[in-house]
Image (cartoon, rainbow, N blue to C red; front, top):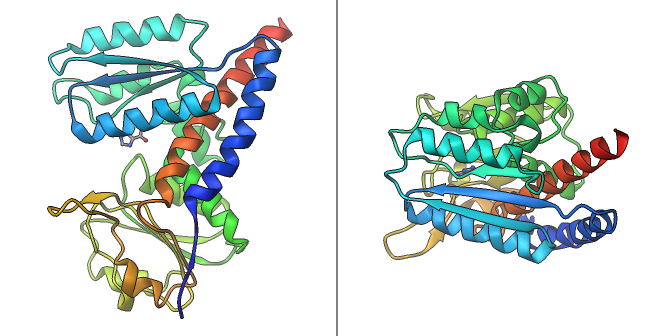
Length: 288
Ligand code: GUN
């Protein structure tokens, strides 16, 4: 079998067209959607991610502001900036790029973001809302993966779903979303013994481990849907995922490429969340 490609780039482009129309229609009603991105320090990967996010804003007509702070910035200064952005009516979404320098308490910063502007969906209230199936601002990467899975047209109810990676950003919320779609969900992580005994049972396999080539063909069920969230830069400069594309695509029915799979969808979901936050803000102002 040779897997069909789940083309994240094409789907993202299609969704961005709809988002552009929504941005225009909101602007006609007097609200220009706005996102503030906070970058502390000079992590090279974070710089690239932030540049992609700003570019996507431009492409969709969302106003963006980039706040770049040196790595020596104190936690109090970051909290003060977030407080200003919380109070700014032109800012509908706030994203603090992670990781933060070690001297800054990530949870304290994330919890300081206004829940209604938390377009990453990382605030504890938004995490809780996701757990009970009431997410308003779902975390962008798993939300993008959900859309990619929907695009295959395969119903997930009753299927075995395995998530490899248990991070707060991807693995855990991904598992919650798959559970809401009535899949039977297992979460594997760095301490899982004999990973292959889980992955081989997966009808849907989502891999977010940050480990190049972790999943190989023999670990994958024939006909599975495989989504690769990994983005790893090899010493020779190549960008690869956590899934060995060549061997796995011979067994899977569907597979995402890297690059061009999950990445463009993550950024698109950020724009969708920002627009959603702006629309909700405009509605609440209109209702007063
Ligand atoms: N760092 C890696 N992924 C993300 C993300 O989705 N949001 C933020 N804020 N930081 C990240």
